[in-house]
Amino acid sequence: MIVMSVTDIEAFLVREFPQITETGDFVVEEVGEMSARLRLRYHERHLRPGGTISGPSMFALADVGLYIAILGQIGPVALAVTTNLNINFLRMPEPRDLVAHCKLLKLGKRLAVGEASLMAAGSDVLVAHATATYSIPRRSEVL
Image (cartoon, rainbow, N blue to C red; front, side, top):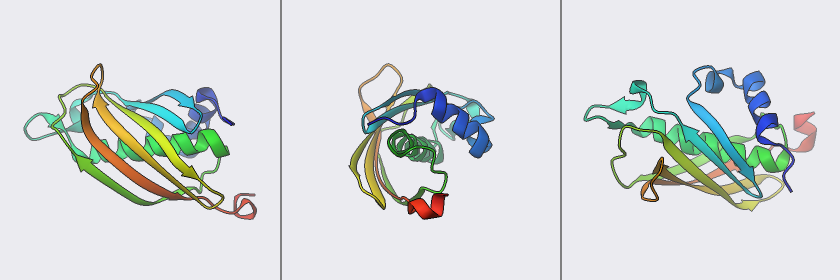
């Protein structure tokens, strides 16, 4: 069941994580059942030598996208944290927007596991694939 809409998540991020929202780099496009889609807007600051999107930018896109998928299911829990993220860089992405299609594989009381597929905007060719685990605090730790 979706408990936070795109609008709710955007407001939460502005309030709790201004470092994510102040540049306007990330756009929450969709929050669905156990899923989310996030866009990284192209900017030169995301490029590495050779003119391709950098690994750290793709890592951040996967991490933030999966966090948003979790928020959509559990609500505004700022202290849900990444405990592990593994990313495979498959192809050099072109210097344009990247989109992360994120899916939760398991959502338990204390742990969430998901995957993020990253593609250049308008393409269905994977440029990176990530899997991640997040720790979800007990309800008493949130209040």
